[in-house]
Length: 291
Image (cartoon, rainbow, N blue to C red; front, side):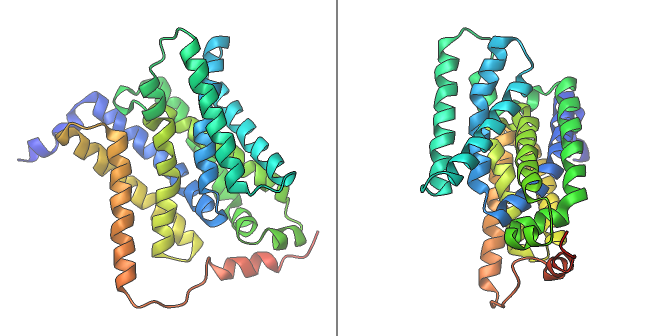
């Protein structure tokens, strides 16, 4: 019986799938907390769709695809910010226009060239076909993003919760803003080979949403998000082996199921008034003298 239960762990391609899921779980879960707190869930969707033309152009230019994806993601983020600051159109509308336009451009470019790239792998990932180079790339990006978020999580939290207060006490809000956008683009690039463009958004929204329902203390929120992502990722990959499904969509289904379960559990409990985030941290940051 034990041998049957451990069967998925005996295959090299399954071992790599579990490994890359663990690598990606930490930065995606932590970043999702900031996106949920800041109301940037649609920004993650926009950037994830916008990387497609960058991938195609990078292939045509003969440069690494990840470089093209990162540049396209940053162009989308910067364009969204510029249009939001210089037009009367609301940010969610601008993001919808930008990401659909970038995604459409990518599809047109992809159809216009002859390529060995598989569109399904770009859109939905190929977790069971992960190579050593993919692991190294995802590991380096994940480590860099995780370290950056850990170093500046308090400043980023205040910036997301109260940008005006962050500016008042002298935080470099512009650097925090574009730093978070860069982290978002890098994280999406790291997830491309595993879960693809479309499913990456699930890893960047669901963990933070689940953790937000569980706790209002931001430090604990990040820990809960990471734990939920790790459990859902491993459970999704393990289940996909037995039901013969693709691992990435199964992981997203696990996260969705976790959200539904937590939501139902919270609605059945008596409501009590809680702060949006850890107010002790906000007060500590707000007490800094203005620079």
